[in-house]
Image (spheres, rainbow, N blue to C red):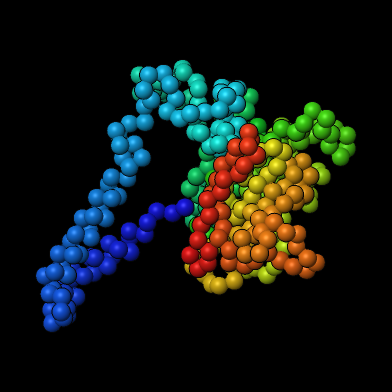
Length: 344
């Protein structure tokens, strides 16, 4: 889930090149010249790896597909609704591929900006909020684009004009201690045809499932931006449920949850390098209509999916999953990449 920590290696290599370092080693079994040459070699290797990274996954230096065929094999479902981009990477399998053909390698250089949108996060860049660098990939359904700002304000924009349709700010969530986190995207859910809201209406028949800057997931009506009644508590899932004791800001959902087969799949961003006893990295599935937990997977338990006893909490310090999940609706399978357990 993270790049190799080449920065530490380079710092050590550079430090060994200073005279006070290699002179101190001159009387050791390894000659100072050998230490210096090894340092230079480490620097050259590290720089070479970083410079070559854009070519590692595409040795030809190009992502262009041969002929008219896509560069990945996609299930038939991925080709439906070509005008929409309904999830972070378009499909539950995270294909990152659009079948649209209007834009090609030949005309992409002629694209011109039609509209832009300013969320207002930059107004807080240097005061009470540390979140202001955009990291979200927008989604698009019909004539509306949905995204979240760095501060987890969820916005709906007219896809043709960029005009804001609505904005939701989770003002009830305290984000004062959540440094170095950012909202990376939202998810979309369409309820079955027989769905009705608690009041008998069709409110939240289509909904946006979004992270907040706290241990919560919010469900919003896709048309109005209002919180969905009957979902979790006051429209929010509380990821602190059954987690036990935890310090403020140590469990945050930042990535767009995976929504598939009527369920919401969540992990969590657990802060690294702080202390032993951090919140659990438990993976959980919730119903997309009510927010009720359906199952959990706790790596620290002998039976990871066993129901918790009364008063029992999930295992602290287990590996967490802060990135996006990948799903295969055909086989009802979810693929999850885990980070390291505490302290990193």
